[in-house]
Length: 332
Image 1: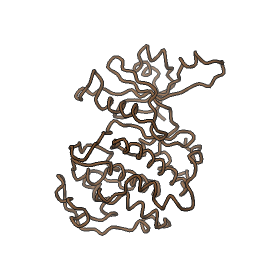
Image 2: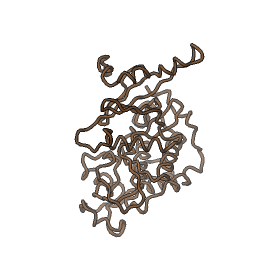
Image 3: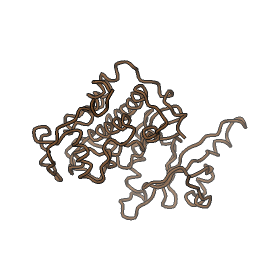
Image 4: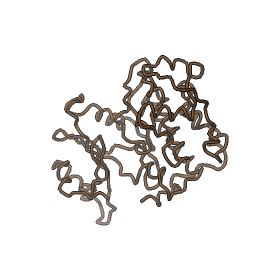
């Protein structure tokens, strides 16, 4: 287990933050920066009784890349994430509690969560039942519905970016790559979505795409929950496409109109699609149909988030469990 150096805790926080929050420990690090568990000591000072429960939060210290666009000293992608979290208030979106920008560093104070979905998905000691999977996927679709309703594409939907509270509530996080969209008429970057959850149109270099890329990522997550691993595990873009086409079949103009005109289109050896009921023995026809609808290669044929929520898979026995029935106690 990684040991935290007490000295490094003194670096990220200005006197203002130190006066408000007490450092507990570093809990995460990534390309975006670092995350720390803190106690709200200002809240403790104003508590009505000495035995009032302590309040803990996660503080995300954002890196400030030298070569990226900045607005009033704040990295543009960080500003976009802040704007989205301030705009969207929903049970399945991580709430932004506070923001500090001090000495060229931006600090985002957010709800402290117990874990993320990857811990459940990849655990070899936790059993995930169909009611568990229904509960997880419905929460993902509810979060996507709120985002897409507000014209936002997440653009990096992965198990690591889906946080889970102690009572099993799943919340979307990490909106650094997210983007507002009004139509598909404005070009967007292809450098989005973690490789193993990237939609085929992005892999083929599409500059014009929509919320369907989030739906494909959700399909990869559903497949991962059934497989208890990564559904498409390519080493690079070409290998990732090969992994997808082995299951979904090779695209053609007949199955995906316009695919050969995409900027990075590469012709693959023709492969027929596999049945999900063969790939995942024991799943029923409705679950196989949902997977196919999420992962269909042509984005225009993919299910919408409303169709996902109303899919027959969720309307049949066994019912979805409640979030607090997810096996969170088994996560270390």
